[in-house]
Amino acid sequence: TADEIQSVPVVEEVGAFRMVHFSGTGAWVAVPGWRIILTADDPVALLCRVEDLPQSPVKLTTDAQEEVMAVIDRGQRNWDAKSYFVVDQSGQVSFQWFDSPPSCKVLGQLLLIIRPKRIVDEDLTKDPWQVDE
Image (cartoon, rainbow, N blue to C red; front, side, top):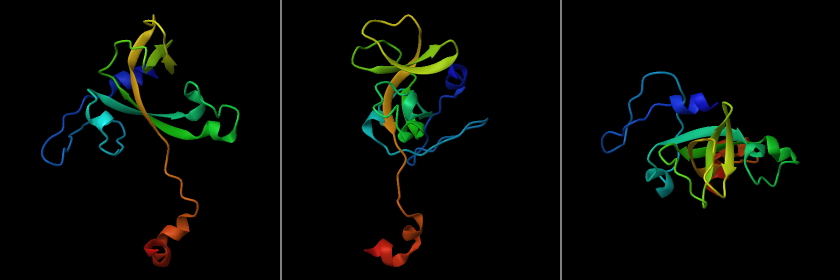
């Protein structure tokens, strides 16, 4: 929900390993240090289904229920015609593109969508003969 997105605390990185301190409830996920994430003012990750995304080509397939991670920047709330945004629509989160400044509340700019890694056979990753080749 929109309230859950707004309640995520802002964290500050400390030291060479960029460790963060946190007290409270929530979940954390490690993501690669891609430039788009490093330059974000206030990145937050959301779990959603592919069918929840705008312009999704798989709305009518079995992949529509696949869970993906959307990374948004809560610090970027100014409208830009080149970007998608996460907006509050009656308390629910929605991903939208706008050709003009929106009238609804913008929660952040959509930066990145990450799909989970797909491994065909998990047991093969445990076999040293398969891993070394």
